[in-house]
Structure formats: C-alpha cells, structure tokens
Image (spheres, rainbow, N blue to C red):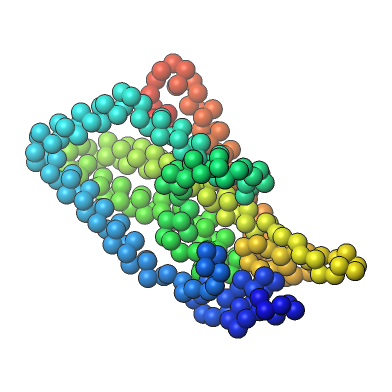
Length: 288
C-alpha cells in the first residue's frame, strides 16, 4: 500500500492483497504477487502414475515370487497384530482436532506449543496443500468452494474405477463373479469411509472460510467499520454485496453436506455396526 487508500500498480483490495494480473496470487511470505503454479499439475500426475505403476509391478512380482509374497504377508500380519491402523487413526484424529481449533472454533494456541506438531502436516489432506496451488488461483470464492467440496467425490469415483478394473482383471480370474462383486463392494465401502474421514477437516475449513470476515474502521469520527471476507478481500461481508450473498448461500448448502451430514453418517454407521462389534463378529462394514 502507498497510503491514502491507494495500492501499488497490480494490487487492489482493502489490504492491497488482491493481484489484478491474470493467474496471479498474493504470496504472504514475500508480500507480493506471484504467478500461480499450475505447472505442478504435470508433476503431480507423473507422481501418481509412478505410484500406480510401482503398485502394479509389486503386485506382479509378489505373485510370481513366493518369498516376496510371504514376506509381505508377514509384514501385514505384524502390523495387524500391533493394531497399526488404529494407532494411525488416533494420530490423524489428534491432528484433525489441532488444525480445526483456530479456523472453526476461534481457539488460538501459542506457537511454542503448536510447533511441536508441525510434523503432523503430512496428514493434511487439503486440495491446496496436496497440489501446492493456493486457493486464490482457482478463481472466484464460489468456484473455490465448489472445487474444495467436490474433489473428494471425484477422487472416490476414480478409486471406484480402479477397484472395478482390479475386480474384473484379477479377482474374476481367481474367484466367481458373485464373490468378485462382493469384494468390489467391500473395498469400495472401505475406500469411501477412509477418504471422507481423512478429508473432512480440510474440507470443513475451506467451507468455513466463506464466513470468516475481518472488520476495518472506515470512519473514526462516526465509529463506522466495514467487514471483508479474509479469503477474498473483494467481498464485503456486511451491506448488500450480491456476490457475498451468493457465497453465503453456498456456505449453508455445503455446511449441510459436509460438517453436518458426514459426521451424522459416520455416527449412523457406528450405531449400525454396534451389535456386531459387541459380539466380536467381523463384518465388511465393521472392518471398514
């Protein structure tokens, strides 16, 4: 800012943190505009393709070499015996609580305390964090909300396709069609629960960004102030801003679909499997 409510060339907004150039975003660490790193899409696609290829190669090698297959079975048995999955869930749940305290509940903790948990950022499954592309690069606030709330569904559908291909190419050669279908449904259910469990905090944070505003004094003499959306300084929270009214509608729709409905669905599933768990009977749903 140059003073007197005037921003430097290429900057706009109440805090001069809006980049007027195409495909630009405000980089907080440098205090200036930078180009959106959309080129990372290619690198991420290559990494995902490499991971899938390595998994397929590992599957083929383990099937042809009994010793490797036996070793993988021993590792899996050991991890199951020490309840490795349960311990990972506890760590992830702890991280989810820590990261949602400030953006959703407004609870701030000293940096000396939170710095101990920086290593838990590996469990941050937000879209912006995973791709390394800031949210402001995706366009308007409504578009950002749609993308952040919709990408987990796209991921689940993509995983469904991979599980279905696995069932057709591999499972149906070893077992009957009925058993292969049962495995497909069981794996799909497991994947869906895991994905929604992991992304729920990050998606909820992005949804609550639509109502996180900050006030600025507009007139000291009249004690007046104006409130702007912190995720998009173009939008004025108070007054009759039609763009923010649309964002507010989006917020309530997505709030119902994610922070409200998803935990209720999880609660319903837990109540449904409660009889099976109490009698120590493992079902596909209970295992998921």
